[in-house]
Length: 287
Image (cartoon, rainbow, N blue to C red; front, top):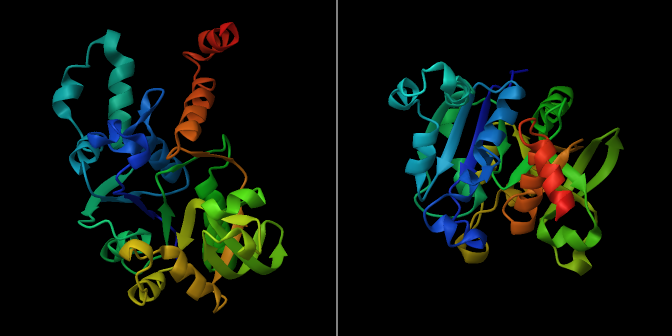
């Protein structure tokens, strides 16, 4: 079984819910204390054994590319002892992984975005991470949990959580016929089901391990609402053939594509930051 060393992160969305800031700044580059969301996601990948990351970019891609490209001029201005911590913070970005970029010229859905990674993947299983979903587990990264599930089953893995039934229509409903601990053997996946069609409260939440045969299913996709190709439809076709499991991961998930979810992430990560947590907590109590 191939070791998983590659990750694909689609970041080509418009960030409509965060306008007007996303008119100029990709929402995945919004800061959580002093790091953009996208760096925290890349660090999760690296902590899970990933050495190569492909960003599927669209609008404002130059900001993302500049951030993840080494800047020797900036580093040269941070060499004095008083600026050592800033030098380290900037220098460590380059050491997270090897970064590359592919352009999604048209916003045609998640299936279309992932299809652009086929050459990068090179016939290997890979990690797929969506930028709206920020995860936290201090000792066992969520992506690493999914990689272990793949190593156990050899199947495509959906990172899932059980959510309130009322929230299932925001995501997708994952049906299964049996479970082995936190691994569920998937039979069907319904994208954003109507309330009357919900069959399961298990929902996929932004982390996946995909086997390379996903690309064959992506090529057969038909466009849905708005002419978009949804990767969930490919997962559903694979599940019908017994090729998909779900892993109920252990960790906190933040929906940073939502204003409230983003603010919760800022608060929680601030309270984990040794430099600011005590004064920040005191400020919150005061308010």
